[in-house]
Length: 216
Image (cartoon, rainbow, N blue to C red; front, side, top):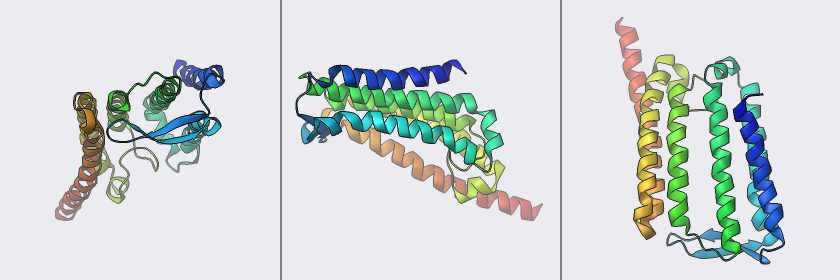
């Protein structure tokens, strides 16, 4: 088993372990939602408030490992498997730090999500950019549009550009820590813009490739 997979198991254990260790010290109601100003506007009973992320982490990890097995293009995962496994690890670290923020808030250490989320989401987007740049054609990972899935050339061009744009979106997201109540806009707007742009780009590029094929 690779070091990255050992890391995945370690983060899952750490997430569950810190939850169990702090459970008895937490209040009966746990903050579960924050508004754009970083203020708590929703609570859950402790059992649900602290179990959501550990349960989601385990279930999503299982799903991530299942996808390459059921993908019709499963052989292509071998070409970017190290980046794929790395994304699972980064994603779980992201979840672990969110869980830590929830626990700290429950213990009275009010760390604003407007400071935490931009940095964590930015890091996740940046790594996603590396994954996208290296992803080969498949049905589950990457910029999957009818046009990228229909043409390897369109897939490669869209992912080369999309990877760079996701990295830029990650840097912009991180800059949100300096903008207080507007922090989450720096997370949401760039990544949505990249998603829409790459979808349109793949369509335009596909039309160009098809016209070139007909002309040839």
